[in-house]
Length: 364
Image 1 (cartoon, helix red, strand yellow):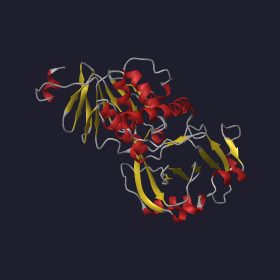
Image 2 (cartoon, one colour):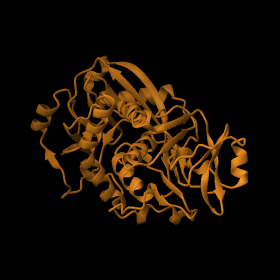
Image 3 (spheres, one colour):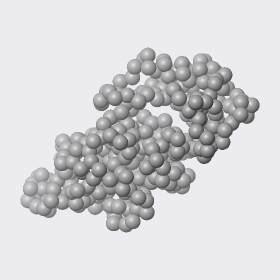
Image 4 (spheres, helix red, strand yellow):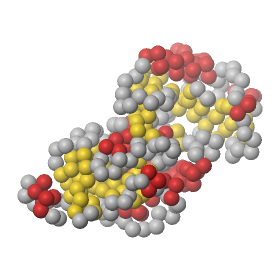
């Protein structure tokens, strides 16, 4: 470590880690656990409270349907979906927190003119549909059954946070990383608005804020999504996904209704008219939800990218890695992101082709 970096630590004995992860959402926390399994010491630096941004706001659909996922993302999405049962089982073992992983599947509703034959999904007859979900109202959609799962992102993030602490991951919260520390052209740590920390490897998992850390300006942007949660309506078994709304049931009877896709900067305020519009769309699909009461409404900021693909891999700065830009698939892609990035960071073969997601496509 050079004199400049030592001086930033006020000449005290510098504590360093093998890896610093910037961002304490589900991606960063899960990566910290994967790295600890491989023997690395890890510090997670989070600008707010761990797990309180996009991870906290998500619905938790584990949708790897080829109709709704960019083609380049299919291998990653499908691999991650397969990893989920073991992933949540390990979190349960280490944290004691159930993540409400449900495998009853999804009913996907499409207008007849948008139906693509030959998709990997089972078309459901009207009679069968009424057996699967008796609370459904009349509609003109074509329905398909998808073998998908869902999970409770808030429980998932709480479990990951507890598991990370159990594995002795160090966490610094309430402090924003502003830039990298460099020594002879390679990473030596990070500077925050309060302090500095040393490590030869830094992984940027800062979501919508990933581009705010010098020297690389990753082209991530916040994409706002408003949602609401209702309780007291009919019990739903499946995730219901229609063109203008989706409904995600929880095992405790709650139903999540979402979600908007808005270019609104870092504005996380909810709009009453928007919330009511989504509620009406949900009632049109499931009329019995009219008697349900709104338990909560919120907005989250998904990390979008110009080509709607995540940014995963090594940067042009030695020792600096990035895992961000997951947009609407952050929860789905968590297990595979943690796996491939842990392997990359430790010099192993990630086994999946990450070329489409390279930071180099944005000159980083």
